[in-house]
Image 1 (tube, rainbow, N blue to C red):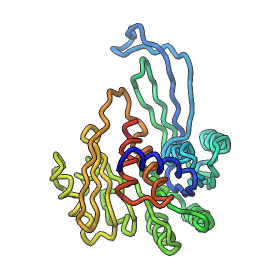
Image 2 (image 1 turned 30 degrees about the vertical axis):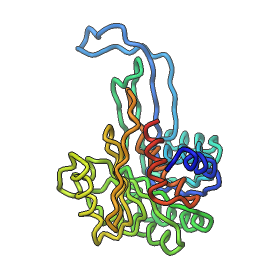
Image 3 (image 1 turned 90 degrees about the horizontal axis):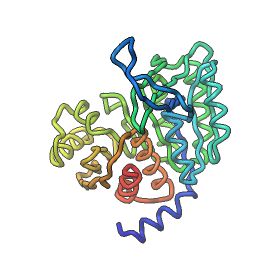
Length: 304
């Protein structure tokens, strides 16, 4: 895929319409400076200078889609708490995002707080619930999905194992998208890959692939073999495996394998890179790109 074709594809992304269903969370970043070690324990003392909050998890996928100009519907569950209300506020403020947030009264909304100094994370503190959503919440999520699929080009399932894409939602969501003729891109967290049967593109990282397949994924051949093992008879069309510094690998159920080298660069923090890959691949598929085109564009975006 040459630079001209890539540029042309990027220019068309704003015409896509994507639904993102999954685990939304609030990402809070606390920035400061460290100049001394605590006298109470061998830990750095962070002098707080500022804080920032943004949509995380499925919300970060939605933000990436919206940044590409894609009309995005975000469907997720939140609790009746301050974090959930903040997610609603942030969603409403984002251009190109329409949020369909189902409020579950007894649920705690996931909050991840990162403490950062000199561009590097010192600590991450998570407050979260991982229990499956209530049956009534699942019904409301799937009802919102039914409505959104009528105008969707692609469905993204952003699974962070926080309870939204449990047994009551995951399979039904894929079935509904398939019936509507809408391709499905899934970012898996379950080791049982069969749960995502019917997906068009599955995007595990190399550690998730190794855990799911039980095979070593130390090189190109190992990754291809592990992906092929899971794809054969698995009802999934293709797998895009993110491999950090080794790039990415696209493996199809028909046996085609494409290894994409990493766009090497020095980074301090890879937070959110997987969300960017998923969003970019989905955006490309939404405007008619093939799997290899989508994978190549996603690989470049992940590098950025």
